[in-house]
Each structure stands twice: as C-alpha cells, then as structure tokens.
Length: 333
Image (cartoon, rainbow, N blue to C red; front, side, top):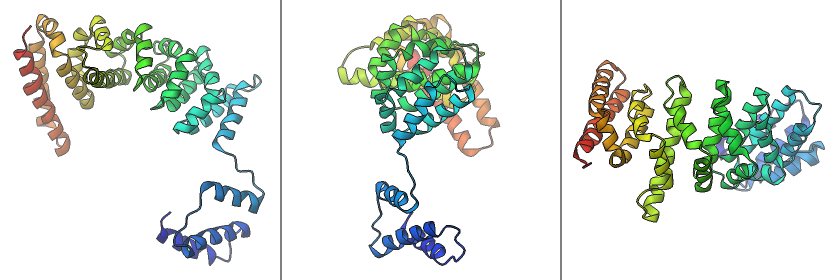
C-alpha cells in the first residue's frame, strides 16, 4: 500500500467507532500511523506476523508449515479423493513460488506428488500434474528432482491418456519440467518423448492440445538455437532427433492451424529448418501448399475488421512470402 492510500485507510479505520474488533482496530491504527510518522517505515512480514500472534494469540503459519500439513494429508490413507484434491490444491497455490517449490522437494513432498501420477484416479492424476507444473516452472532444482523421482516416465505415459483433461495437465507439467533444462531434454529424447509430442502436434483431432505441443516444440527449438550459437556446433542432438522423427513432414501442415499465434511460431520454426528440410519440402510440393496458405491469409486480412489483428495478419503474410517462400527458393539443395 502506498503512502496516500495507507494514510486514508488509517484515518477511516481510526475514526470508525463501530469497528467490531477493537484489537484489529488498534493494530491497524498503530501500524498505519507508525508508517506515517516514521517517514513510511514499512514493517517486514515477520514483524507483522509477530504482532498478530502477540495481539490475538494467533498462530500464523509459514508457507512451509502449510505445505507440510498438506503433505501429511496426502499420506493419510483414510482420506477421500476430494480431501486429497483439496490438499493438492493447497500445494499448487504455494508451489508457484520458486523457494516454496524447492522446499516442497526438501521436505519430501514432491516425491509424494510425483508418485500420485502412477495411480488410476483421474482427479488425482490431473491435480498432481498441476502441482508439478506449478513447482517446476523456471526451477531447475525441482525439474531435476522430478526426473530423479521418475516423473518424466509417468508424464510421458499420461500425455497419451484417454482423458483429454489428463493429457492437457500432463503436457502442461511436462512443458514446465523440460523448458530451460538441457539435462531433462536429453532424458526426454532418450525416452522417446519427442516422438510422442510430435504425434500430438500432427494429430488433427487433438484440439488445443495440438497448439500447446507446437508451442512447446517451438520454445525448445529457440532454446537449442541459443545453445548452438554459444557452443558453435552445427546442429544440436535435439534438432537431429526432430529431423529423425519426421519433423520436416509434420511442420508445413501445421500452418493450417487456425490460431494465428501458432501460425507465427510454425513460420519461425520453418525459417530455422529450411536448410535441413528443403529436399523433403520440394518433394512434397510444399511451395504450392505455402501459396495456398498465403492466399488464405490474404482472405483473413480482407475479412478482418479489428485494426490490430488486421496488421498482425498482414505481418504473418509478409513473413510467409518474403522470408519462407523466398528463402526456400534461394537455398541450394
């Protein structure tokens, strides 16, 4: 809260004769006026927690304590599925913070959640995957721990589950675990996970899951391009595995996905892949397909009324015509 807002709040609360809890009234006044009179000397969370505990005899629990309680609930065999789902909801809320994600692993909670991926109750599968996804985002320590606990194998199995929501949650968790972590990416390739993701990307019936698979592949390609630049190698093992698993034949048809953001990512992936895939693309009469997509974008542009989206579509068509089609014609086989 800034100085002005805190000052107003202090005056409103301190002048209110009908405050239903005098201690809360006193605490807010004391806290706010302290900030005003000490040139906005804000107190730490620890100081506020201590004040609350002293004033109201409250036991204000830390994030770690709350997570530990939720972990104990998950270990209680007598709890219902709904009660365990509620405990996992709690863990998901706190695990988004990087320090909390690390603490979840340190106290043994992450392993318990990972093992929930290896059972048959869909609700628990989905919620456990959500917790892992929350904890693993941009958190290498958690990502590596998920691998060590066998989580990658479970997630790869679940992205082929019969339940669409379970597949979606599993791919979300898998994406969080693999992004930004070369060690996990190596394990993914080793376990045949890249082929499974490519299968989703080329599945016309996969709906939004297909879009998410394309987005993950694009992000991994961008990451690997940075690796290539830093290490000065010609091609990464990841890209070699992509080519081996039919990347060139899968990529062009992905431009037919209606989502414009996905189209852009596919186009950028094509730019990166032209030298490796040109022979396959010419054999597949790719230029005629690209011309069809260019005409489709032209129609979208003409029908679109929103100015910003209209400009975006125009930019996409320019990328397709000036960078991809032109580049494809220029590169030697």
